Amino acid sequence: MRIVIVGGVAAGMSAASRAMRQNPEADVVVYERGEYISYGACGLPYVLGGDVDSFGDLIARTPDQMRARGIGVRLRHEVTGVDAGASTITVVDHASGRSAVEPYDKLLIATGVSAIRPDWAQTELGGVHVLRDIPDGQAIEASLQKAKRAVIVGGGYIGLELAETLHCRGLSVVVVEKGPEVAGRMLDRDYQRRVRAELEGNGVEIRCGTTVESLTGKGGHVTGVQTDHGLIRADVVIVAVGVRPNVGLARAAGARIGKTGAVAVNIRQETSVEGVYSAGDNTESTHRVTRRRVHIPLGLTANRMGRVAGVNMAGGDATFPGVVGSSIFKTFALGAARTGLTQSEADALGLKAVSVDVSSTDHAGYYATAKPIYVRLTAERVTGRLLGAQLVCNNHESVKRVDVIAALLHGRGKVQDLFEMDLSYAPPFSGVWDVLLVAADRLSREIGKKQE
Image (cartoon, rainbow, N blue to C red; front, side):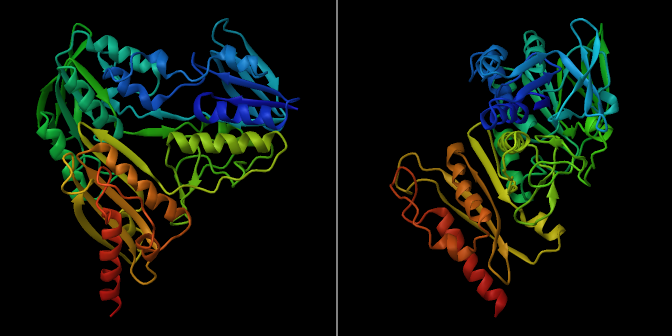
């Protein structure tokens, strides 16, 4: 059996490893158009910020390590075509420039996503970057050596993490966001404002409701960002406005593309084309709260999808149960996390949802390092089924308790289930009544009011 995997990193290499374990006799080959097959892309901002020593520290597995496991690795080999009828792919070797047609029995398309570059960012000016992979990070590092002023376009995860990174390196930082607030796709408005306050309190300038129109340059290098509210001087510009799933190969193979714009698959990661699978950031998943198809490209999701695809391609039986949209980030001392649905998302879906906001301390109130923590808990009005939660705290590690809610969402738990949970307690970690329990109690009473 010849198993061909297009794309390395999270989904591709997880699939290769699991396929080899499932069927040691299989011929497993990974084609990767870049030079790295297995690394922690989420750590890129932290290398730039000095929390991680080097980009090399992000590498989890080298090609030689994977080859030692019996997995064929072809670096700088780009798959440019798929003939599903003939079960073949067309591969270009960028080192030699030659192309070849290769057969497969099972094919995994794990082509990930590409950073969106608006028209104004389609430029040859130096100092204009996106951050998706190690070469991107190395290019940004080179640009930062002489930079004093940075503009980050986009107030999502990457933009906010980089705002802290560049500010701590001594740069003047401006974040430009087209929407009304930063963290717009992650949190409800009140919690977005807390994130913005943390950034501004640390000296990062935030310009929301601002649209970039063009870039200015001199001598082949960027000098500024022209917006509808005026010019912002810049020595380096980071474009972080979102990502787009790479579905060209899947479409060429005849696979169905979902309404999200990502590849549609079943619970076995099979596409609509026999023998062709898809996994990772280019692939849809099912939201366990709404039962709708979603595209939420995150590292753990990609790894899980890849494992499932690998088992099934090698003759086993595995399924991917879906996601609840759990995510977390920090900027300066503040941590923010969410899982499930926000109130605004629930409203947009027409769900009868109710939320409560609770503020407390992340440790016992009398404990020296206690910090304020804010929680929004959301549930269905009639059934009491939990729909989601948002947490913000000035001790960023404390928002990791969002995982308690994520676990309940996977089991379609109710508010009462949360309130009855036996959560651990000691003063350095929480109050005797953890903020999640307080929120559950208050939400239960709110639901009771709504039903009276």
